[in-house]
Image 1 (cartoon, rainbow, N blue to C red):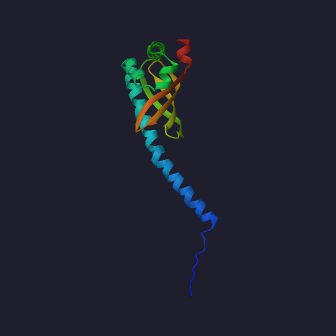
Image 2 (image 1 turned 180 degrees about the vertical axis):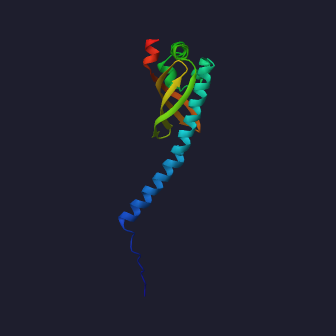
Image 3 (image 1 turned 90 degrees about the vertical axis):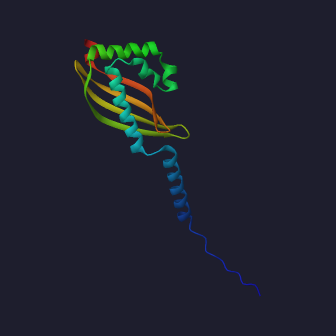
Length: 152
C-alpha cells in the first residue's frame, strides 16, 4: 500500500507577494538607501560651494561624471563658474527646495537637488544632478537660474 500525501500549493497572490518583496529588497541593496544618496549629494553641494568660493574650478570639473565631461569642456565650464563667482560673489546661504532620486540598474542612482542660493552680490536657483555609485558622487549636471547673473 502506498500512501500519498499532498500539500496544497500556495496561492498565486502569496507567491507573487514574496517575489515582489525579494525584488524590492534586491533593488534597495543594489542601489543604496535613497536617504543616504541624498546625504552624499548634499555633502557634495557643500564641497562644490566651498570650491566655488575659493575659485577651485579645476577641482570641481575633475569631480564631474564622464558624461558631463563629454558634454562640456573644462574651459567652458570654468567660464561659467568664473562668471557665477565674479558676478554673484560668495555663497552666503543655500536652502534646499526640492530633491529627486532615480535608480538605473547597474549604474547607481541619480540625485537631483534644487537650492535657492543667496550669494554676497545676488541670488539664484541652482540645480545639481549627481551620479551616485559606490557611495561616491560625481557631478552630472549643474544649472543656475539667476536674473542677477544676467543683469550684472
